[in-house]
Length: 115
Image (cartoon, rainbow, N blue to C red; front, top):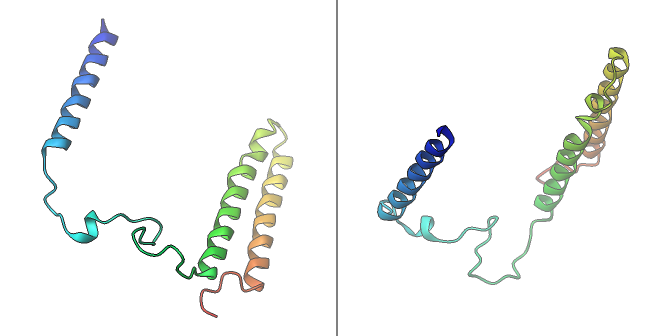
């Protein structure tokens, strides 16, 4: 009985919110808000505009470090070890790898926005 009541209440609330969202008009409509926006480019203009290579390199660097952190950060805890000393050293090694990568990128001037 409780699950039926819970599903009914959730369904009613969802339906009410959807109806309100469609019936209330947009109060602040101006050209910037109604125009499509895709990654800083206007999709209605010419597609062969010059692209900032620095922006691309910084975006790729961000993605690489983000993936490294997402994939390597759970590694010490995924080993399921009871040896706290080993887990600490693996965590320190992970931080050192990320720090060395960031230092290398910095020394190669990959993080400089201006040339």
